[in-house]
Length: 128
Image 1 (spheres, rainbow, N blue to C red):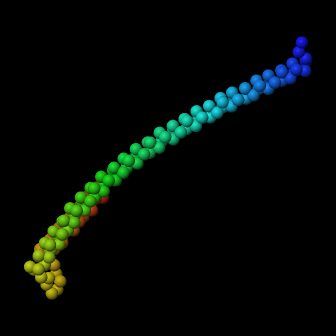
Image 2: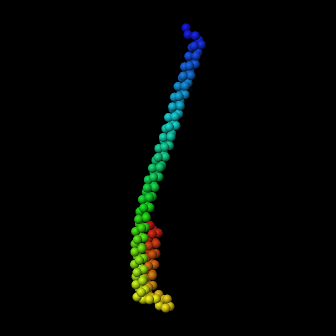
Image 3: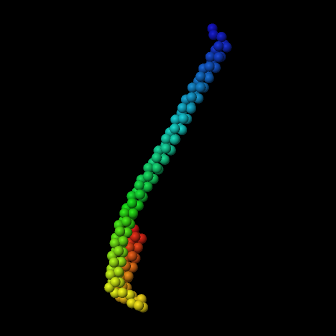
């Protein structure tokens, strides 16, 4: 027969082994649950980041389109300004300003046309 002391030690060893196995298994379970939570959080962060990236790309595309429109408007306005300057200079050379500095009807018409074009360009760019 086996001595009771050896049986007690064997029982204690089996109990400790069972406790250790249970401890390890529980650790695996908790680690798995923690990793699942972290994975879900990472997926949520990824979805939010991808959504923000799409919004950012759309904003960049709108800004680029607005910049192109603004550039075209600027070029058109620059051409109109140069044309108005040339017309005003031609008129000023053909009709010099009088000694009392009173603008004649032609000169005043040229200035009014240029002012209206500038105001129209400003109103057009403010609406863009």
